[in-house]
Length: 137
Length: 137
Length: 137
Length: 137
Image (cartoon, rainbow over all chains, first blue to last red; front, side, top):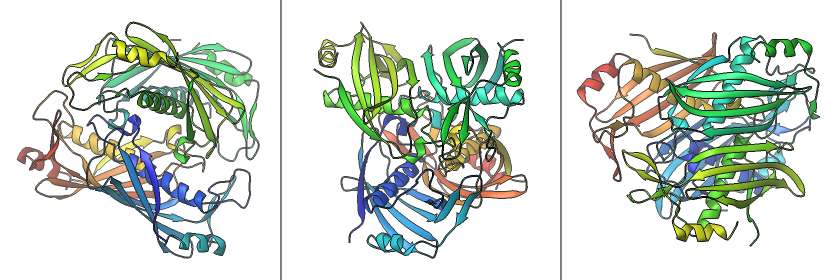
């Protein structure tokens, strides 16, 4: 199965006084595209009030900037699922405007329980989720 | 007692492609100055894990923009406590750069319990907090 | 003609530690919906490098919060064009999740030239733009 | 000379619905600390209207998250200048809360002219700036 594809239009708040998209905005677009992928697979991202709810904090994030993006650009974001470990998942991102590469990024997340008042506890990735994610690996 | 005074330097991420501070950034500076005022009075803003913890969601927020602010400007933010109701508090803000008025804003907050899994429940403002806030009224 | 309608899904970065959408995020959604309305009318929002480019800084912004919104909520944003003055335009916003009102806001913008190195200069709204905006008044 | 040290208090807007600082907020703190280092050396970061103005867009940014940070945490940010190339500079960041490591990051910037209407043009780093940055290398 090919990579998952999302589209995002650059909003004005994504820009800065250099006239281009601020580098931090790419991390927000990555997270938003990751969540769109999870929704497309039927994986719940955060279910308030469920004591067994899984959540996916980040253990690392990186981005290489290849060309500037500007206000109102429509960016295509390819998301591929990389290595799936016992508890961690790598997502690889490629941003493009038409045929032009704009940025490449990676986010590594780790599967955790979020327990009210007790913080985050690392968990093995359930098999059902592992199988779903593997479709984009 | 005079209004409470905070200072904030405009960060690069506060700017947008028009070369000035984005209008939404003033709301972040207002909240940050409000929280600095509360800390100065010894009022806890959010205490994770305390089941009786109070929190202060906003019921309204507004800002009038008088002059543009730019990257690296150092802004003085005067915070005055306005009307204190049974559950609500008004904060009034005045942003200035040296002698020049930049913006005026208001935030109305309401005293609530934040209960895990049960959302926000409106509460009367405790007398101890009412007395402290009155120092800047 | 009815109000213009936009839809936005709440992203994770729109939330805060109280578990709900941060109040400032509504201002970003308002601006994004305003720009979607302008694009739908064929009005250029910002054209880098055009020395006669118009831009629309805000002179005031306000929001009343009626109910909390949460991560992944899909919000409908109705945008109406209010008073159109010589240089200023009021936009009125209504946020709803299904039939439930979430927030109401207003942004007042003013028509300006953005000249490199010279800042913002107020301009009368061109008749062509006034006519287009009136479709949603 | 030791690394440069900045301090930042976590603001409420830095948090998300998982109750911790959102991963993207670390990139904003890195940029803010980098700019504080540049100001401490007397290096102008962005001078509107100066046609020879240098600016420093990012070519890459990364962060490893070691422990969660929460609202109101006071973080110490050590900034070291790493490799200084012909046009590029690496900054290394270490976030700590008291003795506890919270995150490590790196930003690689490239020296550019920002010309109105012409975008960004890569430049060799001037010797005066190279000498100043070397103090924290």
